[in-house]
Image (tube, rainbow, N blue to C red; front, top):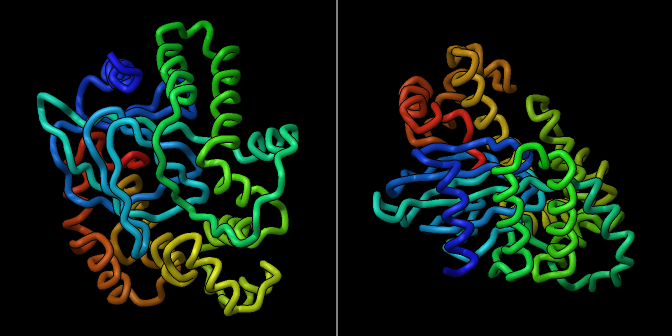
Length: 303
């Protein structure tokens, strides 16, 4: 049995039915799907996603990534994506996990490692795909097995998570993480702009003002933003608004008119058009469909 097979078995112990599972380790989520899913718009956050069994497709703007067992997807900033399980059946369900990472811990660990500066010509990406290195995979398996020893989780889980972050910083994913946390780098400035947009998505924002906040010219800001995220700042803001609108209607049972105003739309008809274009159905029909998904459609971190 390979280490990937072992991880699949550990995930299956927790995710015994289709759905997304928040584990006793707050940063660790697991998922199971028994068949191919429809493309689903959702938000990915800073973290490491691993497929232990089955396959996935993730679209970020005009970029598409497919990955399967033994591969890992590192996400360095909050991203609206379209996620789809592409390989799964009852005999071999999709089994995956997400480990959320802590930005402050990454910055501190990188400083302690005294890593060499990254070459400026190397362009970072908000999502990077790579094979799982065996030491990282073994650490992930130990973290999953720790769920069987709940009394040890508070003391041992942070140590294993720290090991994983150290190995990520020094492994194939390292350049993308190190560009992100390097103070003053374009990707770091764009990441700060993304964090600001996420908190203020409902406000009318002039992108030139956002560029000024990032200490860049508007054209340079747009270029670095698109290179990192695969979309323009305005497209990103629109997707944030629509994702928040969907969650509001799911969790608070708001109607489309009230929701549109809450997320920054002045025109309900424009909101309905853009919502239908983004999610493939008008708000009421889409929310009805979402509630039929495993977990009620609310937790979509793993798609």
